[in-house]
Each structure stands twice: as structure tokens, then as C-alpha cells.
Image (cartoon, rainbow, N blue to C red; front, top):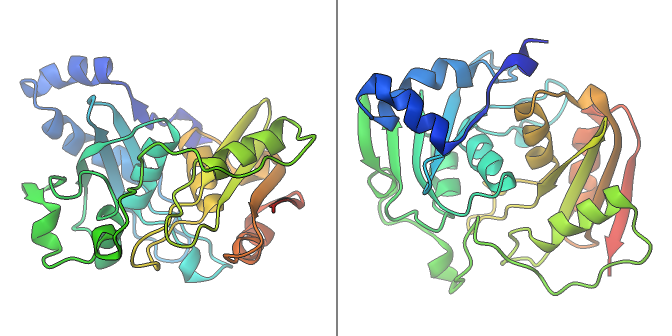
Length: 270
């Protein structure tokens, strides 16, 4: 499978080394890599490949691409910028300074990016235009501050929720994801674990002040799985850990029934 040959994460030391060919300009390097990021797109509906690279405050590169499902609701789609940011989040990034993308971000993505800690200084770089402030794309924006919420996406958090008893490794991973998810508005905590081979890929709920750009945990996990060179056909267990409110079970089942090969297991948070 070509996807397994793709490089979707470039650590800072390799970024620095590869940027020498661009006179040390890491943005120029990222722009040159956008065609590779776009190859990671899964687009059976639109056939429109969007690639993105999120750059964290240490200089690491995280690839992302748009993700679709032909037999599920269009609302289950993950945009390339969401893909890159959630990829960075799942790998431990806490601050994003730059987003490099091959097409101008749509309104959905602009609102999603506005949830980040450094949204006010975030730069968007396009093949035809560099150093664009997110604020210039989203003037007079609506953000967490309008709801008096200090929490931001990617900011590390450990929610004070009770851990269910007798969890196995996959269930524990799903609980840990739920415990560190971003749900400051609904408090509908959720995390998921996908077991593929000897590895466990997790996803966390990423809520948004405007709600609709919210990213469910399964999409975050599938994105990480794909960015790691695997596919949902390889998943042998899928464990969702969530609150009973928030609609997580219904949303997750709607997509997993279309892309998964195993049964979805549920661990409830009381």
C-alpha cells in the first residue's frame, strides 16, 4: 500500500537538515512538501485532494489531508487543516505556529483553527501567498473568549472524571483519551482506541466554540491511524469511552458501521 510509504511526521532536527536546501526557510520546505501531504487524502466523494502541514513551536512538521467516507454523512468529513492539527495533538504538540496548505482555508477550518491557543498569531501559508494571519481570514471572530472559556484546543488537561474499574489496555487508552479531550462547553468527554496489530491508536473529542467545526474522537483516531500508514481494515478492536450525553455513541456508530470491520465496544463514563 502506497500510504505506508508516506512520511507524515518530520521531527525538528530533520526539518532543519532538509531546510538547508531552501536556505534554512522551513516554510519554503513545507510548501514543497504539500503535494506529498495531498497524496494522503481519502476523497471518494469529491476527488479533491487537499494537503496541509501543521508546524509546532519546536519546528516539527505534522502532515494532514482531507478524509471522506462515500457511504456516511458529509458531516463526518475531516478537513485537511483539522487533519494536520489533530495529528499534531495526538503526537503531543501543544502549540501550533503555522499552517501550510495548498488551498485557502474554508470558513469551517478558519473557525476550527480559531480554537487554538495561539490563534491570534497563527500564520497561514499558501503556494501563492505566505505569512497570512488567521485573524485576516476571520475578522471580528467568535471564539472561546466570547463564552468566557479560558481553555483552548491542544492545551494539556486532565479532567476529574472517575475511571471505570477493571479496564484492559485498549479500554485504558480510550479512557486516557477521554480524560484529556477538549470539551469545555458540553463536558461531554469522549475518547476512542483503535487496536491494529500491536499498536493502539487513540482519538480525543475536540470541541469548538461554534460547535459545528467540532471534531469527534473517531475521526481523530482514524486520521492518526492513516497518518501512521495503516487503514481501518486492519483494526481488530474499537473501544469508545464517553459520557452518555453528547451523542458520541450515535455519531461514532454512524461512521464505524461504514468503515470498521469489528464491533464497536462502549465504556461509559458515569
